[in-house]
Length: 222
Image 1 (cartoon, helix red, strand yellow):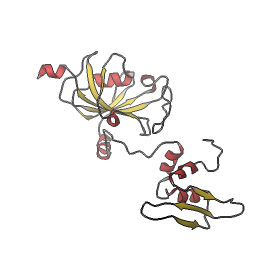
Image 2 (tube, one colour):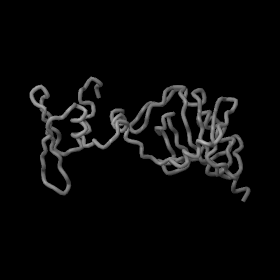
Image 3 (cartoon, one colour):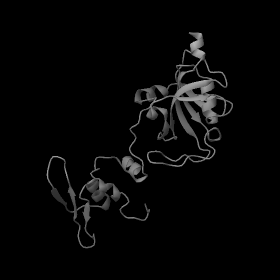
Image 4 (cartoon, helix red, strand yellow):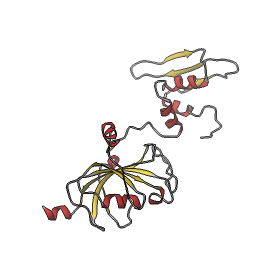
């Protein structure tokens, strides 16, 4: 989508079945749109004396109730955030009072919940749920959306360095927020995708992680 287009958000209007009709603003200030409702027949409405092009777009798109942050998300190709998280609003408030731990590597973390099970030895397989975010809080990956914990061998380089280090000191059943600095994150970055923000190379990321269980190790102790 060309950045120079004066109607950058206009393709979203394709959600209406009969499309949009926009008159030349040099000859008319009238923007007419036909919207089909499921329970009614064709209706038409006329919108007059709009104060700005932005107002016109908001009304045509039917998003006048959305915040400008939501509109920015639409412009970037990202839907408004409505995804499952490991730390919801109440958890976020409590996390403000949790002390930050900083390791020698520069990794920082806060324990949301300290587990009661064993810690994973290097090379052991672990099952963990995670929500990966850029510092602004936008999610770029999540096991919760896939519906299954992520299985990998911790400390074996199968995941980014910051995640490996952060999970090694956790106990099964625990939940932790990892503040991963750029050198321990994604050296090549991650490209953006529908519903996913771009992660720049060597940029900091935030992971909420829940260590669900350690296959084999826990069964031996039972």
